[in-house]
Amino acid sequence: MEYKHRIADQILTKKLASKGAILIEGPKWCGKTTTAEQQAKSILYMDNPASLETNLQMAEIDASVLLDGDTPRLIDEWQLAPKLWDAIRFEVDHRHDVGQFVLTGSAVPADKKDMHHSGTGRFSWLTMRPMSLYESGESNGIVSLAHLFETPEKIVGVNKLKIDDLAFLICRGGWPFACGLKDEAALAQAFDYVDAVIKKDVSRADGVNRNATTTRLLLRSYARNQGSQATIGTIVADMMTNDENEISIKTAGSYLEALRKIFVIEDSEAWNPNLRSKTAIRTANTRYFIDPSIGTAV
Picture 1: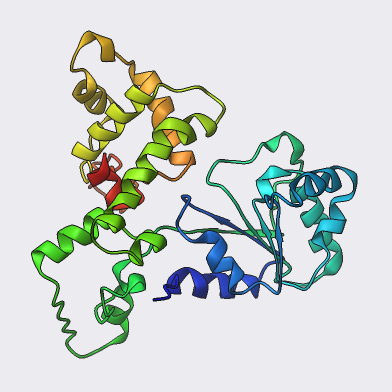
Picture 2: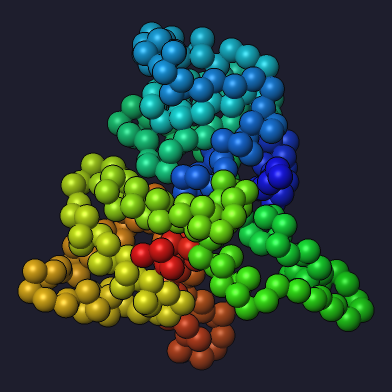
């Protein structure tokens, strides 16, 4: 069965009609490249082993050669050659047309020392997340926020999923590859994702070597506090099971920032409706993972 990021695909279509280049960001395994491939007219896979070395050398010599092709042109794993950023900005300026390039790549941020332009006015950003139940086919999407405003009559929706089914979907998550698998194989994807984050990705976020045990303890504490407005101090206190696990609030904050950079966690920002009352209705961010399966896996 083929799964498609319906929401991201629609947003990408709109952005291609208004900007010269689109940068798709989000956690790994969420379908960034697949979504872009569906709209691209030509594709450059920077990390193709057969041409990787040649691509990197050409990016240093004359990056414009790599940008030649039918548009929209997809540049996958563009962060391997950060100089492509300025080359694309230059091309967008001189082509005077929209929908020229789509950039996708690893969740790990690109090295910005070779990027001299912010991309303002030329680039548009699209943040992708794992699929919703509507996108994976487990929800019919009858009830939505849009319908609450657009439909004058009563809105009624029925979901035939049982409690056990919902529990399975929470643990499986919205990872596109997992959505095509069943039972234990589908659940294994979240465990593999967590292991990759802990062992490698959290240290690659900013080049700082981070302890795997500390990262796992932090993620477990975060999972226990998911959906709450727990402070970093509360999360740290929850981690302190013995003297070997001591960590300062400042260090914990750096770990959390690294996890944000690679789209593992995504807090819901505090809300203040700007009413006359001096007290905000909610003053602290609410803790969430980018996908619920991360919390259940850790």
